[in-house]
Amino acid sequence: MKRIFSRILSGIQPSGQLHLGNYAGAIRQFIELQHEYEMYIFVASYHALTSSRDPEALRQSSRQVVIDYLAFGLDPKKVNIYLQQDVPGVTELAWLLSCVCPKHLMDKATSYKDKVAKGLNATVGLYTYPILQAADILSVNADMVPIGEDQVQHMEITRDLAQKFNHIYGEVFKLPSYRLQEGAGVVPGIDGRKMSKSYGNTIDPFLPEKKLRKTIMKIVTDSTSVEDSKDPAACTVYQIFSAIAGSQDPRTTALAERYRAGGMGYGQAKQDLFELILEHFADARERREGLMADPGYVDQVLRDGAAAAGKQVAQMVQRAREAVGL
Ligand code: ADP
Ligand code: TRP
Image (cartoon, rainbow, N blue to C red; front, side, top):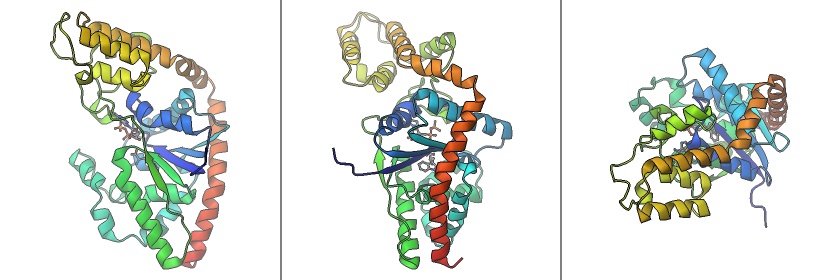
């Protein structure tokens, strides 16, 4: 198969414990791509400062995201994993980009308005968030960025900024493309809305068994009785099952059959989902235990990742500095 992209970058904000939505929508794709491409996956801790006010929680969840990336199956021999603050050239580039960024480009960014509407502080950092994101991407000269749908506008802004910079100073940046998570859709949370840290409706696949089961049993379902035929597509339990096992997996199609046939209660479907999660994440759960007990290894992964990313970033920042006359 012909390789279209060679270098991939993506990041995730350490704003809380990762959940099944993050896994199905983002991380699973990273794990698949790592075998084919040069990858840079980082923890967007500077971005998280637009919402975090708790230093200890930020430190903890930044580290936890790395541990969980590794537990889910990112292989540090193949992927450069780093914390945003360990590659400070990125923020320098963000400044250079902000000096060519027309203000109206930020004014039209919808994520700022959405986040302020959700209650985040209306800070300058939140307002210029997309410029820092562009710097993340352009500073490693990434060809492609796997993202969720909510990030499309940020990618367009990234391309606009690269173009704007190139137009003024000559060809420094290539225009990165992006890829939406194929077929992942939006994984619903236990209340049926989009699974999201900010809704408190997530399922953490690393929960201890008892708590995991309890969380799954709380998934909201309708009041169709056990005997009646049920529509799998309308049920949150089935949707989550399908997102993890895959919609074409025989276990998923068999579950759909049992929904339609009637005679199966939602409690049974939940039990099936619980067992699926334990099975699907058995290796990840075990690896995580080991990683939690080996902080030295995690430190080493982060040092190696920052060194590799730092090399790319230093080159790009140098080119950008020269281009602007520094
Ligand atoms: P959250 O909404 O929990 O704060 P983020 O916005 O940090 O999650 O998302 C991180 C990544 O996970 C993004 O690529 C996003 O598209 C993906 N993602 C988050 N929630 C879901 C979901 N419910 N279904 C599918 N993908 C999701
Ligand atoms: N804004 C992204 C999110 O909320 C996180 C992010 C920061 C990112 N920088 C990035 C994603 C660069 C991809 C590339 O999910």
